[in-house]
Image (cartoon, rainbow, N blue to C red; front, side, top):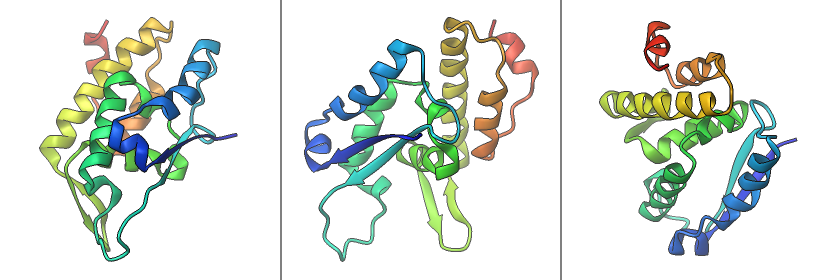
Amino acid sequence: MAHTITLQDSHFQTLDLTPARRVIDPLLAEGKLPHGEGGLRFEIDISRDPADPRELSELPEVRLWFIRLDTCYPWLPLVLDWEAGDLGRYAAMLVPHQFSPTEGIRYNPEALEIFMMAKIFAIAAWLRSQGVTQYTRLKFMTQMLGYEIDEGLFELLV
């Protein structure tokens, strides 16, 4: 069962993380954060001019909200519903990119590298604090975004 975080105009205008906290914090407290299919999803319901060609990730108020969320929950990409595309959409909120109708999202390579390394460090530390010593899902996450990690990196993070 997916857990959906529903966001509306007012949340972006006030940087209100309440909808995310209402979903994430109880799961975190119970130790029941989802992984994979059935993970966390975002439903964004905002009013926009139908002629506005921008993607949601190109709207400054939406990006700013996701930057704030990522600061509070830096491990969040690990528990998103990847199969539903939420990992790619989440990364697009935080990493500069271009969109191509034929190739999809094309992240800025340097920005993606910085984002991925920051996520690897933050998520590996969070996993260790949860008593998890296997980084398989973290490695899959990086691969989903087209980034390959050398196994030796994780040995340096102990």
